[in-house]
Length: 175
Image (tube, rainbow, N blue to C red; front, side, top):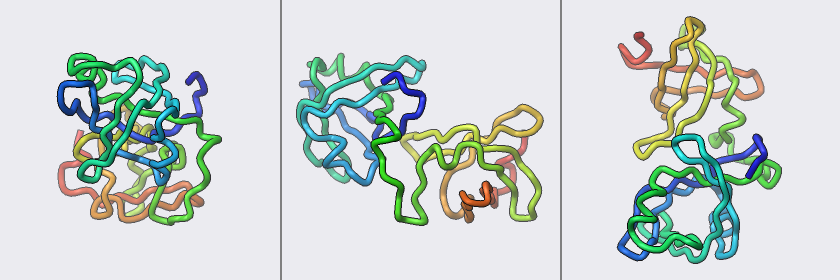
């Protein structure tokens, strides 16, 4: 997928079993469409390399999906895919109707301020990790802070105003 305007719809967590099946965290409201057998997804590895992959089979498993991709046979091949982001073109995603749900592109570039209104920086990227999603905030001094994207720490997101309000625990934003 060569378009720079892509959205994350899933992340490969780990292999499952010995036949190449993978545990996938879903980051889309349309998993039945995005993860249907025969669907092609873009990929981005941790090292930045990208490509495409086709879904061969899928089944639900404890709140996640177990996915088999074409050409991935065996545990070693599956292990090499750990952490892989699964992507689709942004144009294929309808806007969210849920005011508490945000696409990465809606957050990236927003100004970040603390609850007192003091500027912290700008959302540079949304990182999808096994533990939680993180906002990578580029600070004005050039440093970066990773802020867990949870309501307790990020109580307000106002896309229209271009602002994210954070209430960080002590030490989170210390350099």
